Length: 390
Image (cartoon, rainbow, N blue to C red):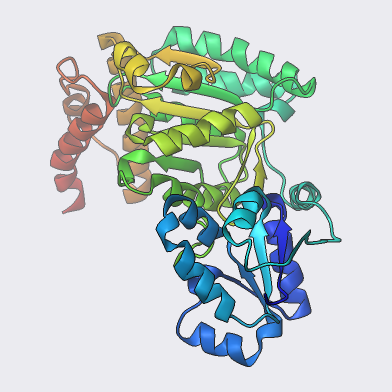
């Protein structure tokens, strides 16, 4: 038997291992990449390679008929290379490759922890969070939402109570994140809640919004947090990227009912722990964040679609009702007034009373959501705008 050692690492230390390899001139690769040019380079300078066999182990757990082939391939690789494996796969690796490795040990990574790295990043980038608002600031935040969100009086009243409670228990280290689940028909203001909360905190950075209506049913989790190491294109996922880009402690998750079970399980853990690890082993601590989930589900379908365990993780569940005619009228008038002001300022002109009457005469009662009202306003505005532009 050839003298070969397998070293193990903890998943939360993987990005630190990458840094250490880069600093010391080593090349870290997944065993699944050992083909073609990689094999030639490995034969030329085997002592600079760290080869991660974790993917092999995961594969062979399900396809044991290939163990002999993998053993033979592994036995042909230079023993000067360093072979590593994720700690959780160690026992399986020991069983599968018991004839290929003569000793086992843990990699010693003498460097700062991931949590310390995250804290240093926080010092550089200030995240605006509800939990950090003073009493006056929180009241102003709630007033902004109440003033700009059409209808849903009960929700707006309850939101203030819930957020004040969250701020308290977060300071006591009893609650890391606050999750809201809004259900109801499309176009009645659910997503608007997230936009208003983001704007009330800080409108200078992009909103961290994930829409599962844009995801395919396959590999949704990979799209969310990135592909596992060793896969082609294993970059950061959409959630990781948008968290980094936003300065606001808010994540808006739209059309959540269209996600698949692996995604549901991911959020089940995230809402419990208040943090998550992406595919590149970067830890994201969401302490103090608000997570807003929206869905077009009805209450009955909500119970059928989501497991009891996941439903129990949501701190506040609310069904949005269809807007009343009075709500739609207020919204329409506000939108028309805002559009008129922008139009008059941009073109340095004034819209006549007659044309304003036409705009305010839009029949909103037959329109059951805000998107349709917006469309009707735009169509009517386009008609009267011709005489001012030409």
